[in-house]
Image 1 (spheres, rainbow, N blue to C red):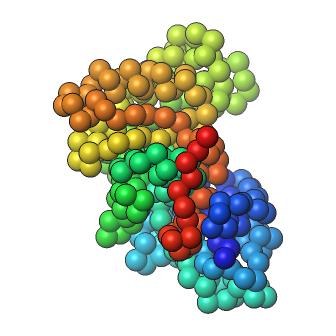
Image 2: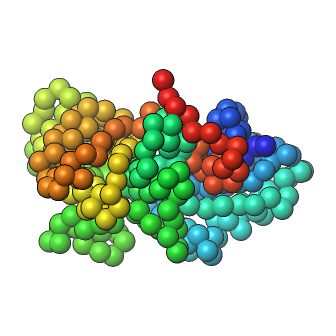
Length: 312
């Protein structure tokens, strides 16, 4: 059995072949580029094999899992884009992989599911996991007893569009004060530049901001504290609704490690009230950039073939 896993992000697309034992092969990644469909076609053409079990897609949202469409906030040219049908058409043009099932879920949902399967949380007995992708945008997803909770449209757990500041900035989604307006990489950089940060690099980005925060540059540290406070508010709102055991953070901003996680854990501890909220743990993904690919594959690999990994 082999799954073709596709991870659609705001700035990059990734694909891989994934097997039920967790083996990943033929992994490839490309920037979205000016023509996202051409980028996707190139990756699928170079990665797909004849004996596919199915295709799992994790995409930045919002999505419509029933219609098979996506409208990633950070890919303006894709609005109600028929992603599932497009992938089917791409496969139809290749020798071999025709008529296989194609499943779609949010990228945050897939990150959470991949972490539960291959990151050790399923093997450690986690019942309810919240996964959060903090990158060009902010996405999320829930795994309940090893099963992704998608909701009727596939958007359950989309934590990036919980309002954390009713008087905050307008969000591209149309609402105001969403978590994404504070915690996404571009939002953090914009705020830092407007509040005294002078970036030493030619092109300011979240990586440069994290490096300066780690060096003790005050405006950069304040940007990460502001993000940590907003993330903690959204996490605890979700935890109060779903009685969450574990929170796993992935995405490019999470690559800052303890620069983000230390103030985030402190903010969660400070804001948590009820005892069941104080028990939740917050960790960075152990799978780095592969968590979403593992989760996408898990959408189409039979569950009885996927034994949760117990980690090391």
